[in-house]
Image (cartoon, rainbow, N blue to C red; front, side, top):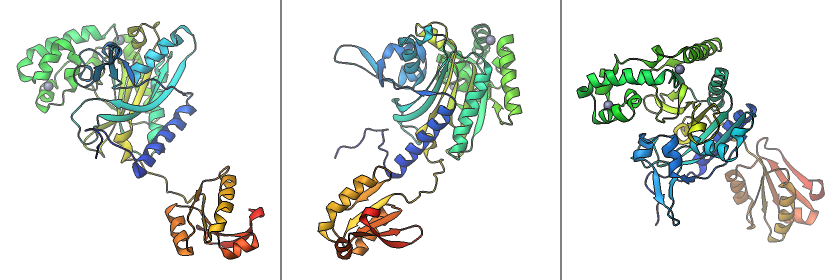
Length: 403
Ligand SMILES: [Zn+2]
Ligand SMILES: [Zn+2]
C-alpha cells in the first residue's frame, strides 16, 4: 500500500470540512476589503526564492524542494506564497499601472523540514498581498482584517508587532548589532555565530534559550528608527490603541524572510503549544524592485491553515437537502427525475437500491438530510411521495407534480 510522503497529509471528512470553512471565511472577509483571487504556479524558478526570501534564510539554504527539471532548469516548489505573487504582479506589468492591487490566494506550500506537531512538509496557507499603498493606515487595516478572520473562526489570539526599519535606519542598526554580537560571540550557538556574518538580524529570534539570555541587552532597532519609520510605528500603535486591539511590541520579532521592512507582525496562539504563530506578515516595500519591477510598496500576510484547524469553532452542522429512496424498484427512475429537478435548488442524495423503510431512514440520517422522501407501493400507485421533515418530524403525502 502506498502511503503519503513523510510530513504530508490527506485531508478528509472532518478535517476537509474545517479546511473549506477556514478558506471560505477568509475569502469572505478578504473580498470585503477589496481583495481579488490570484492563482500562481506551485513550481517556480529557484532564483525567485533566492532573490526574495533571501540567500541566507533557513528556507532557502535548508528547506527547499529544489530540483532540475527535464529541461535542465533549476526549479523549486514554492516554500511560501508572497514571492510568486510579486513575480506575477511584475510579470503582468501591474507595477507600471497607477492602480493599487490587492490579491488573495490559498494553496499548498512545501518545506523540507523535520516533521513535527503543527509542522508539515506540505502545508496550506491563505494569504493576502496589497500593492501600491505606502500608508501605515494600510498596515493597520491588514491587521484588523486578520483579526476579523480569526474572530469569525472563533479563534483567540495575541498580536505581536515590531518595526524592521528601512534602508535609512536598518544598515546603521545592523552594524551596531554586529558590534554587540561580536562581543558575546562565544556565548552564542553555532547557528548564531554563522548568522553574525550572513544575517545578523536573525540572531534575535534564535530559539536557543541560552542565546536569548545573552541577547536581553542587545541594541533594539525600535530605539534606532529613522524619523519616518518612527512616526509610522507610533501611528500604528496609536491606531491599534484607539481600536482597542491589544498587542505586544516584540523587538525580537524579525520574521524568517529577508524581504520585510517597517511593520512586521505575528498572530500567536497559546492553544497549540507555547506561542505558536498562526499568522504572520508585514511590509515589503523593496520586494517588487528586487524582482525587477518598478518601486512599489507592498504589505501582506499568510495564515497557516493546518495550524489553526484544531482551533476553529465549526458552526453547528445543519441538516440539509433531501434523501430520496424507493421501496419498490419501479420507483427509482421517478426519483432520478425528481432529484435532477430538486438539485437546481438543493442538495439531493439518491439511494439506487430499493430497500425497506427502516434502512432508508438510517440512510437519511447518515446523509444528514433535512427531508426523507420515499416512494413505496402505495405512493407509486397514487402518484404521490411520502415526505418527512427530519427536523420538525412532520410527515406528509404529496402529489409528485405538486412537489
Ligand atoms: Zn527607517
Ligand atoms: Zn543561537
